[in-house]
Image 1 (cartoon, rainbow over the protein chains, first blue to last red):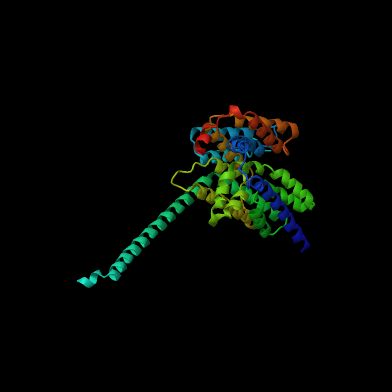
Image 2: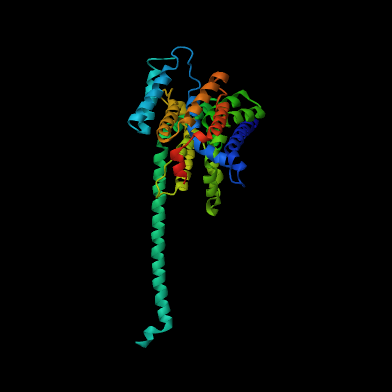
Length: 110
Length: 275
């Protein structure tokens, strides 16, 4: 029972803090209109955030030792080229993921 | 002859015609509404197709981890529906198994998820106007709290056709993603252990998804300064502080830089669509 209680409490704490981070901007501007600079950030930040998220996804890649993140780099390039060429999101994601899964099994097994 | 034209009879006929016309109109309106609701629903499904792969497998992974740590599927279901954050749920398993104290859990969660604060900024006005409609006031907190990395980028790149209700589409997208996530977390916990194929590397689909979003934004936006700023600060702090904690300083510094560079950035596409 107490084990269940601890599990429930942990999930509860994680959930509440996560909600707090998601709700904060809305709570800050419930009454007043958000200042101009916040509206401006709302339009330009997405472009920065997406690039940072890509780096975030690749954060655990080993770039300093063999194979120097070759599988990740090649697959990311494949996704970029596919997206520029075919402009089909699903095809790009699928091609990149398959390429990555094949590379880490055959060419660069870690 | 005369009795056909009594005031009573005429009133009756007029009322009957009026009623019939009205039911006809209402039915037509219902049909139209149903049609447009269905259309926005199918449109929403099309929008989330690119993230299905990543959601499915990250959700499955977090469910499998919980299951392997010896927790029942009900916990996977609960954390999927309440926490709804992939990397956080995976980290949480190690908190649970190591018996980390709650204040530590709280601080770590704050650090891992603080990036969400930046997501809300783009949607304050929009979601608030949804909350003002009396029937759907609950949608405002729901939509604010179901914003994840993936749904944020889908909503940011959303170009809703003018004949659809944009707020309805946004709600459908967030709702569908949430359901998909809960389902894959629970499935991971229930059947995960018997999955016969080795799926190592499938998590690259999340990376690929964000790369696609970056490519699309790069082609669309007039100014590349925001993307370059983001990349520069991410790389800088990645090398300065290492892979675990770089994201918050990187986000903060790009935010400050973008404020400083305000007069040099003209986001043609976004400004146009805002009007």
